[in-house]
Length: 276
Image (cartoon, rainbow, N blue to C red; front, side, top):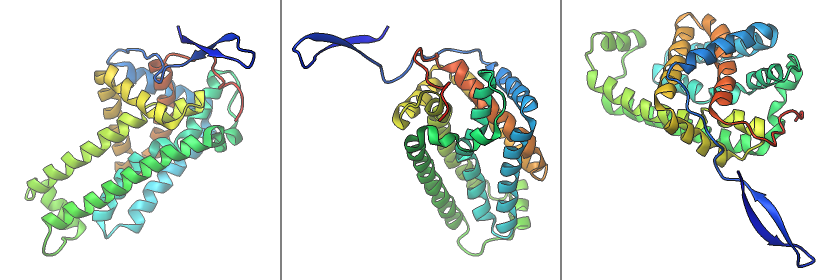
């Protein structure tokens, strides 16, 4: 029940205003809940195939562009591929909207998914700026690690992969993965339900990020499974010459909306039914 605060009005009378807490009420979910979210994401993709696959092709095109442009500079490719994961929640907004509309029984309107960012543009912009800063810091850290461990001459791509497979530079691999996990955990914690919440409730960026962190803290096992599935499916998408991204990324995007619905209690004064 929201707290009530007494405030004087212009006639020196007393009236009551409802004040909301910073973090909405959260739910605890089963450790295997992520599988349910993926299943529902697959159902949304089947119900909205054209719009969903459009976003899938966009993700695949991004992956192909990274591979094509930086084919001979893998030290950049690794950072940009990680950035692909960091910025994924921002690019999946259209998928969240498709799931929201299907949940409301409004059908799949592709056009509205393209402009959904207008519903809360300022706060989504703040959040995008935060993710961009994190991505730039990670990209710089990645280059620094390559520079520290390869002080003479950078090996070519095949030589580098050969070293990794044969564990000839295990110190670099351990440090690189360790630092990467720190950045990945940070981004996952602040973003797991942030954008869906900003779109659904028009919440501010700070509240949405704090809520995401609280969700992870309340459901560490389930969130670990969800993070593993996101990374595993994305990796499968890249290993299938980006073809898998066409189908797997929309499934993850739709599933993220269902994760938000399962983890955060609905707002009684929800305004998500109005078009932004």
